[in-house]
Amino acid sequence: MRGKQWKLFSVILVLVFAASMFAGCGGGDKKAEPQKVTEVKIAFMNPLSGSNVDAGQQDLNAAELAVEDINNAGGIKALGGAKIKLVVVDTTSDPKQAASVAERTFSSEKVAGMVGTGISGLTLPILPVAEKAKVPLITNSINDQITAQGYKYTFQVTPKGSQFGGTQVEFLKFLNEKFKLGITKVAVVYENSGYGVSTAAGVKDIAAKAGLDMVLYEAYPHGFTDASPLVTKIKASGAQALFPVAYTTDAKLIINTMKSMNVNPVIIGGGAGFLWPAFAKEMGDAVNGFVSVASWNWDSKSITANKDLVAVTERYEKKFGTFMTEHAGPTYVAVRLIAEAIEKAGSADPTKVRDALASFNSNTGMAAMMQPGTTKFDEKGWNSPVHPVMIQWQDGKPRTVFPAEDSTRAFEFKK
Image (cartoon, rainbow, N blue to C red; front, top):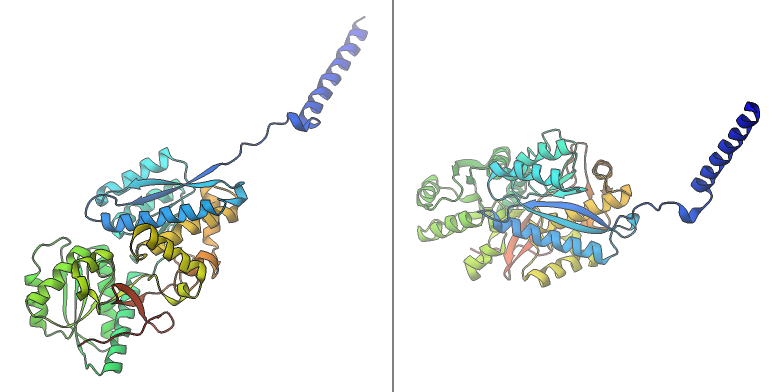
């Protein structure tokens, strides 16, 4: 009897096992479908309050346009058309808050990557936080220290501040040769910040190699309200050319004070405040003729030669009422690159997105938007082909005038 019961029990076990196998493999309509990805988040961190809000708003405008363009084109196709959602975070303009803001964001939001900030003092504290969280970060800050930290999740799409000096000095040599100016004495005044120090150091080094006499090398505090002591030093130095490194408020103060004190060296700006719409608004028609170095410009040849890239700059101007700025262009590119990395990886997993970015090398699509028309991250995460350009304000907009391979306008010399 016990033998028959055991055989019957064995048969039942076999039938149960077979039924379970059939349920798991045979009925396709009963199999649980994998959850569909409908949304992928990208963190946006920039100063949207405080003294750096101008730069942060330019970045936000560009990031929102990039997300709009990606989603209107069908989203992330490798993930079934998943839409990009921008997680907008205000770092404020206080470097002491940047790291804690990033920590809260990464712990509360599942993001595939991050863009920001354009201000080096805010970016540097965020880098170790992103590294710990293993979130790939693309910044448009120009500080040389960004990719000198050895972080694997940090990517820098813009030129380095130390490159600016070389471009500015080469441009001065061009002016000397073409217009027989005979400039030998130069001065540098710079904001005492990461951006200012790295940019000014580049000018000083290259100027010395070019045989120029550095008659003044002077720092000033960000947000100072009286530039007359600084301008007095510029006048006393006998400088024939001045390389000022400043954001908009300080740039306006220095220029206006020089005018009032009748100090008139050739001015070759150090980017930032000399490039933004607020500078043109404050200077009026007098803005035309000013020159500055730029990490990016909206009409560089790599852009004007591509109708799709021109269309991006036109959409930006139509949407926001001003040309696409030095901050906005690289931020737009950064968002598009993260989206392309998600597409390439076929995943929103930050580690896979990081790996896709690390191998990025392209001269097509939005990657061509950074001069000279190629984006390629080296082993340290820097976009190594990129270089600065010189702009001159013409017709109320910054126009690319140097070097020749990037220029779309001729430099207009005004005595």
